[in-house]
Length: 435
Image 1 (tube, one colour):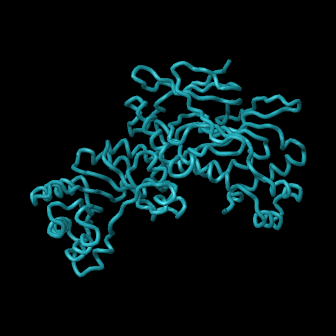
Image 2: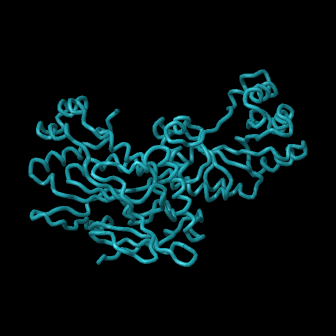
Image 3: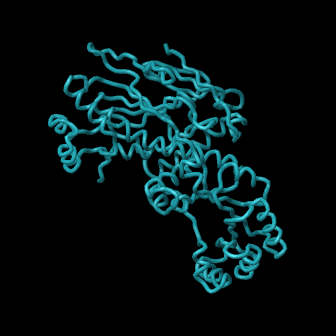
């Protein structure tokens, strides 16, 4: 089992070192993951990465190699090294289910335990949740723009190898149909798809030979890439090779708003009325929306989904909101600094539903125990109990459950929430004191 313990910032360990020395490390504490705002004028965010976080926490162990390096680097004291050797997170984690929508102030994850065991998880949790939620939020906008047409995630060559797998998973949770990444298929159960690139066509003496070879290997239901040379000739060669029952042609260049119409007319004139058109070429949600009136059957999305150029950072933070005082009482704490003021205390969240099950408000209640809120769908679920994660949130089945939950959550939104223009959050967040 590969340890995730050093996927963290040094200051997590130096805080631990100091707290162990002054006797405050074992105070019961409550940490919370939330976002102060939705970046980029988004109208809602999508929480992704929860299943990955739970698996990473299970591997958060300081083995001999990790401890030896910390000792050599002089990061913490000998006493703290001994404490880390026995570290296992034994607290509880509650929060929004993966795939859920969130808004400013949503208490996405609540981590409860001693200060020592909970503070160590900050960097790991934020690195996973910020990256995956940013991709998922961008992907959800693309799904809305596609208006029911399938999307394929194909950004593996535009990011690092681990991020590629995580991005494929996050996109699938929000409604993408498949990914080109095989590891995402193996690890998370995401459907995979893919045929050939331009290199395959260039390998052969001519386009006809390349298409004939691909069809011989994959059948007439395959997708032929028709823009290596001339698109019109490429389409004609594709139908010559695959017949009018050819599955699809893919276009990866040119002015798609013009080219797609021309290709559709040509396919129909050749009798290939059932042959689908797949488009790629640096698509984002705005390009997808522009193509909405065109005879496009599906989209392939890469760069704009998996890189920072396609989406702003999620901006999630991990803050202490309550801690035990000297006599054992749990007291609320919060930052008061300008523009970063927080709300202390343990929180519970509800999606307020009105007529027709339409969401109208995100209500956050500050209370020690979960209250009863009429007409509110509870958003907080138990994810980890006494250090043991909910098995239903893990692995491929957990990712599938997140995908299904996301579809339900999106269906609750008011229609204006899917607008691509910058705007205010689709739902207001109202924080109230509990009983």
